[in-house]
Image 1: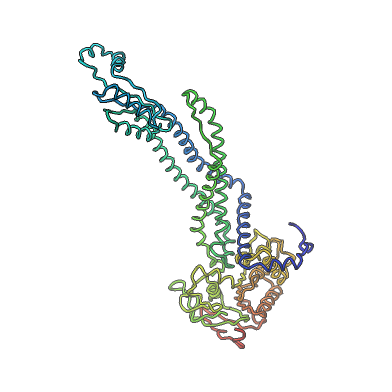
Image 2 (image 1 turned 90 degrees about the vertical axis):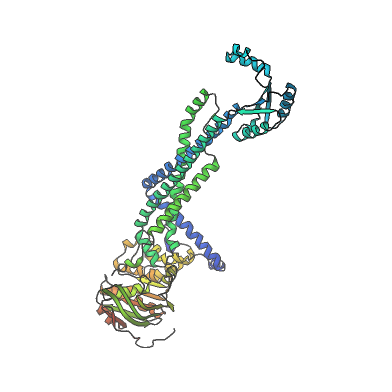
Length: 337
Length: 229
């Protein structure tokens, strides 16, 4: 660029004429975009000129953003686990006492044919009594009974896809409504507890995310406020020569967005680092519980969304600062008393 | 071009900066605004720049009454007014070229136009060879000329100057005044606030004199008042 202006070759007049023939609105739009690009580049290069300060702002943003995202990732991983553990869910259906073995067999077949059911095991009342005798130690007491008090029982294993809290509950309703069934039991308690816990955790994570997002907005707002202070003269002159509010705001909004971009990238790096650092121990721990649990990292889409959200937050913070402080700077003070 | 009708500006109950000021300036007219410090010169200029609004009366610039102008419209009025300050208000974080380009950039002029018009303005004030320098590297007189180039780069119909020669020696001051005279010859209305009486007398132009907020002389145009309106 350091070419002597006199030695710069002049554009031929024909080329100029061709350019001048473009419609004015197109030229206007073009110069608007050129201006945007210039402001964007200028804001970015200003950030590079104070690398340490910028890096610190990025890091603050990065930490504030990485924390809720990390928790969300953990939550997603946990939900995957709870889905896996639900395979233990089994539905036990007790027949009415007067139901015959024949009737029970027919019912077992009917239930077994349902799409949500993987398999049905029939335990007839004699076998149930034998098992009960063996396991309860009430051998003598049972001898006093005139007849077998136990009903026929069906053990129903749900199909893979039905092994969710909702799936099991609907299966339960279905079996319960059938003729000859006295009572249906399923041990949903721990499943519900786990679900309740992940729900609670999800809410806590979102609350934390909102608080930290607000913190990010405030941090950027404050940084942009300082940058407004340091460019006071420029703002005064721009307003003096007829710069609109939009024109004066633009560089600061870009500054906010760039801070957001940096913060988003730092957050992503922090997430990848901690994932890498934790993955070994987690694999070992999961191995001890013979679970295939693993922490899932951020997908490409997720990383992209993280950075976009960070930029929006930066922009928002800048916007708030600009709204609050830019209007105070009026060129009236230049002219003195 | 400029018209003040019974303009009063009161800052608070005991400080009245302007009292019922009446005058008008025509297109291409060059006038001085003088008076002791605190007489209301700056206030008058600020009213023209819509930095302040009058307490009473009406300020009209280019046929536009400024009193009722909404805040959002103010920038567009300022684009038609070039201003030169005593301390020239240049930005030292950019080149002479970029300083002069600011009014064009604000308007969204195309880079091709910006280059052409900035060089024309710098050529006019004799600083074309210094476009790539930082204003800090220039002398006081040169800085003031950069300020003038910036004020005229978008060819405003009205040029205001607040003590433009305050820090300059008589030779440089005369040069600057000649520049202003040239602009008025091509139809720019020029109003120069100054208390450099020697210079004003030498120029022999219409002079508006303020005294404690009252316009005591120069309130009516001398002659040829309505040409080319």
